[in-house]
Image (cartoon, rainbow, N blue to C red; front, side, top):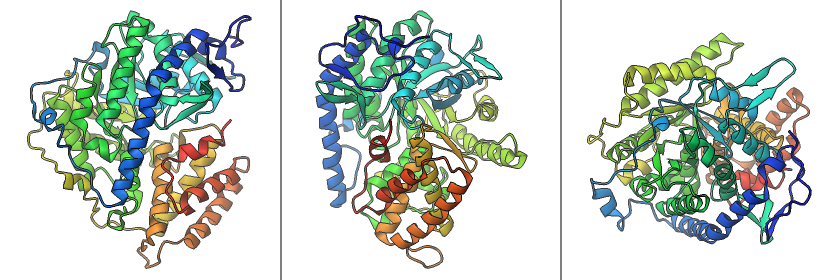
Length: 534
């Protein structure tokens, strides 16, 4: 299908699209769709900017010694046992296995056909946001909503099965811009761009098919940020004549600050809320980032910070208790292990690790979980089938036994936790390989039998910065230093260049050096990396 713009079509007033030509631009970037995005941006970008400023102000207070706590001025919301979120739509009530992946046509078809109950098409951490990827992703979502998405290779035609997973979209976070669309001469909010196009093109179509416009919301840091999203939803529905409450949003609790405001986030979104998800990898990154100036809160090797350690377990169980008290779904997080169809031993280890992880989540009361690969749908499904049986969820499993204090969430002690050269090397390797992949246009990379996305790359680079800044001592008594980092980086870079000489290794190494060796901590690697994308 041609994506050329039709003769005579003009941009809405004050709107410019400055991205390179894209195959499906004519279908996705219609004047009406762009006008809708511009309306949302003009209406809500000032509040977005205020919230981003509030994040910076709060970070300065943490750097000065303040510690987060449950909010005094919203205590009544937490104490009030009477309120509940809206009931789940029929096709979002059984969420026992959800599969995630970038909004790319082939990936989407495989995921929608995988047997999972839900598929999250990702415009955020798993998608490298080149202009081509973003526009093609919106086209693929549009085609999937109409059940006509196909993908052709020389060997095979990929098409959707009669029965597919429920489609959910994850837009980019509040902190990101989409520089290829300008409103009033300035880049549009990437969150509003991704949401606006997906909603404009698909909301009515999905409702007519018995589904609805469903979303995942990433990286929120407060209930005030959720309030803006709720107001966006109300405006979008009113503007397009969509019944209020049609939108349903699941919030990823993937920042330490959001963990203190789970009730309040559900309250703000209560007419549109579908649940909360334990976004574990960004959550770990958030702890490093928010408390980067505190040597007593330095984390050990990433591999040692599992969901079984006390502070991560407290976060997961608090999420289940909160969701079920409000009639919301509690969705478990992503295990990074993935199978390898060519290596039976690797696959067995991956399945065993995933099964252990999902059994813990189901036992805690989670209503479903995430997987990153179609081959993991059966093992996760087996665990939740055994716990749920014919029930769509286990919201009736209340957790009055769970009592979590601020100290429980903030005591980041890892029993027997150590920083090792192996951990340093793993972080350097993941940082280089993921950044090279991302800069080459691939935002979800299988590395060393783990599925890595921007969240896990954030952990890798932020740990290296944290360890270097604090001169953390390795288990062999060496201090982590810039010299040690550079030595390991050179070794890993040489090995990777030999294996894949065509990757943008130089750009990846320069970017990783900036992130690890700078005096100031970069809030998000994607903000710096985005400048290097087409």
